[in-house]
Length: 257
Image (cartoon, rainbow, N blue to C red):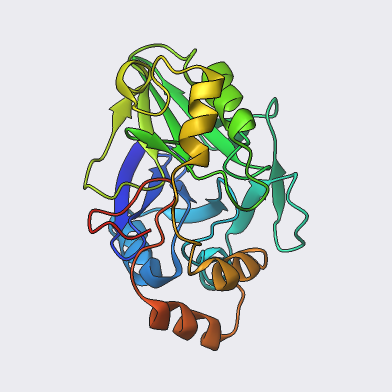
């Protein structure tokens, strides 16, 4: 498998590129509108053809490039089947593997940050990776105070779907605000300050007392992302005018959220 972890600095978003060496097909997970040119250059450099954009959930802190990439490359858009949107081509759900060439994604229904959130497990001989979106972050987790968030649901998702994975499973989140790239299930299970060894009551109390500011980009980003990023140019301009980060679960290094 060809694999790249790509970073968008304004929203601290990780986009993941997966390539099948046999077919030359590729998947981009959680791409960002501002990095379309970079992603297309990566695909060209690796001699890959984009087959799918895959989303973990409807994002609140940036606009996806899914529709833009579909218009430019002819790729299809895959996102959770539970989302009531008309812009997707494929609905993904737990129990139905999502495959592109030799790339195989096992969707895991991990609600809590949003009520339709999915993580994706990718297993290769000797290496297991889980792409946790905004459900499980490095030393943190996604917020549960908007988009039908639910702290109890998130606690169950992580403890029932993610923490039971083998200790050395690599954890790749959708965001990190401190320039960290990867963790492991064992590390998060043992030392995650919100989740490691915490009861549901303790976790719920932590989440209820985060006191993070209202996500300043949510009112622009969520409607745009429910159209898979097929939004008017002024939406992008408004998002840029707001500037700064809208942290999904943990404060940015400067203390903003």
